[in-house]
Amino acid sequence: MINFFKNTSNIAKRFAITYIIIGVLGIFFLDRVIRVYLMSNNHSFNNEMVSFGAMFIILTGIIIHFTINHMQKIIKNIENAYRELKEEEKDRMAPYEFALNHSVDGIHWFTVEGKYIYVNESTCKMDGYTKEEFNNMYLEDVNPNFTRETTLEVMETIRNTPNWRLETTHKRKDGTVYPIEVSGHAVVYKDKEYICAFSRDMSKIIENRNKITTMNEELQKSLEEKEILFKEIHEVNAELQRSLEEKEILLKEIHHRVKNNMEIISSVLYMQAYKSDDKKFKDAMKESQSKIHAMALVHEFLYLGENLAYINVNKYIERLFDDIKELYISQNTHINVDLDIDELQFSINRCIQVGMVLHELCVNALKYAFKENRYNLLSIHMKLIGDQIHVKIKDNGEGLKDLNSLTKSDSIGMQLIHSIVDFQLNGTIEFKNNNGLKCNIIFPEKEPK
Image 1 (spheres, helix red, strand yellow):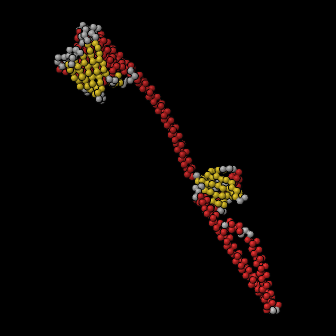
Image 2 (cartoon, helix red, strand yellow):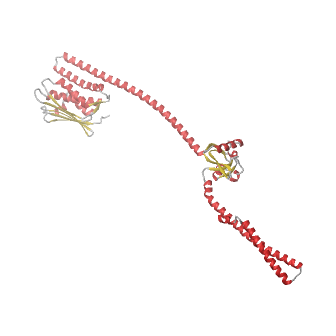
Image 3 (cartoon, helix red, strand yellow):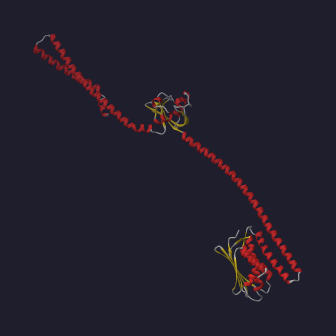
């Protein structure tokens, strides 16, 4: 197609030369024909002129016919070439027009006076006007923030500012206003300057931005409230800690006073026994003192320990046996003790219960099973097996001939043992002779309510 336009660029010159050549040849042959015709027929001059004129008209018409026919072909070729060029241009521009019209952003061109000369489909959808309506509109017709004067000013600013950007508003055809972000660039096309602008609807973005801002404010408020709450909780915890420390001190003081009061009672009993000459009375007072000391020892452990709720049984039993041994064993009697006790912790109630049972059993062994100048052995084992606690106390004395007498005994000690094991520990007790007297006690690990 470009070659065709190159071939037809000198068509006027070629047509003139062709016409001159045809005209000269026509005149030449016409002259020869006229001469032959006149010489052969010998007509008059007027007739000759008429014949000449007729021949000239005919030949001129033929020349004009061929000339016009040739010109029509050339014009037709030009029209076809222009049509093909237009189709090629249309095909070439189709992707760009598709991209412009289907862009999410609005795209519009202005003159430097702010008059719309092109808008894409997105601009029409956002603002509600047709492309034909935009052709007669200026920027201030759509943007209520501008006047004729400020429109010219902003166009000048865009011309002088690379990557110009602005957040503003547009007014739709129906009167509603919505926020947009606009970027603008100056463009020179065919020696004429234009302004190309891209606009984006900011409604969703601003809505999301406001939501995020609101969420951040609520989060900040929540954090501040939580911080205040944490401070209050910290203050309450500090107050509770102070209160617990005060109560702990108070409880320790109570245990200390209870232990002291029991020691006073023990001292009174000792004074009563000291004044009496009755041996049974003295022995009874001594056993009472020992029982009181066993209970006072529990309060001493609570007072001196770090835990006011539970007592380490292992250490308690060791101390309990040492105290009992000092009361009942003479210097000539030597006792070997086999202690095998699991690491257990008992509450104050259970510790007193177990302590009183062990006290009575150990006292009986010290009083009746062991003798001077012999090998004496006392075994105290306490094991946790499953959910049951097994206690075994065994001496290497002579044992008892009648084990049933233990259950029928009216002594306070044996009655106390059975009462505690049966009704307070919810356990069982069994006595056996096995190279001495052996006592097995089993009770549940979990304390009954």
